[in-house]
Length: 112
Image (spheres, rainbow, N blue to C red):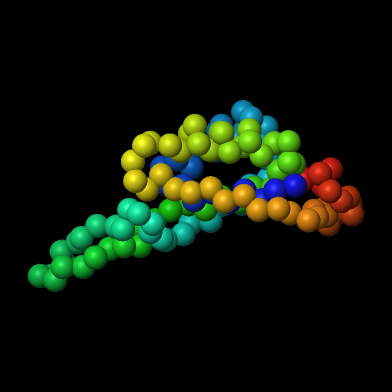
């Protein structure tokens, strides 16, 4: 099993959720975050002061998938979220040792 963490543009969330539903990718967690990478934000002018606004709103998605679904899931994220511009986001893939469904006690891929 793998944990896929994706940081994406907020406007890509709804199209990505629809694509996950179509691809039968289940069980995601979504969090609103602030951050910056190569995008570095923008300059705003407030009451005569220049302010660097470098914390940009993003969405963080976490999904645990079976090993054989990793590439398919990453492809869905890439296809939906790529604009070709700075700020499209990042995908991180980490190993997951175990998954346990609390309700039934099932373990492993079946608990996903």
